[in-house]
Image (cartoon, rainbow, N blue to C red; front, side, top):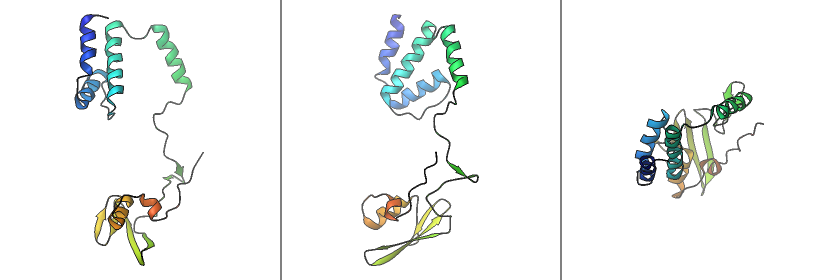
Length: 152
């Protein structure tokens, strides 16, 4: 490895997360939302070395292509589908969730984007539960919604 490359790789450790993400986008041609500095430094260092020293051999590239053709490559699993719609733990927009709590009945309206409780809009059920209880808790559990159905 040449001295200039070594210096460039050493300088990665001093860069901010934003600067690392910008450098990643320059080298890979795609932005990343990864905030893990160690991972970013390793990936950028690998790319810099590959560019300077030639990367994978042609034989390794062919083998990787063979493996990729045989595999269904996905970074994230597809959303579960039932009759063309994604499974959801929430009832349809317009529904009202009711729950007894400390001697009163709470009513929360499900909206397309968020929830309405006592005239205030909230982005999540957890935000509603926090407004009610004063401490963070899982909104699905607080409102006793059923667990998501598992599909395999």
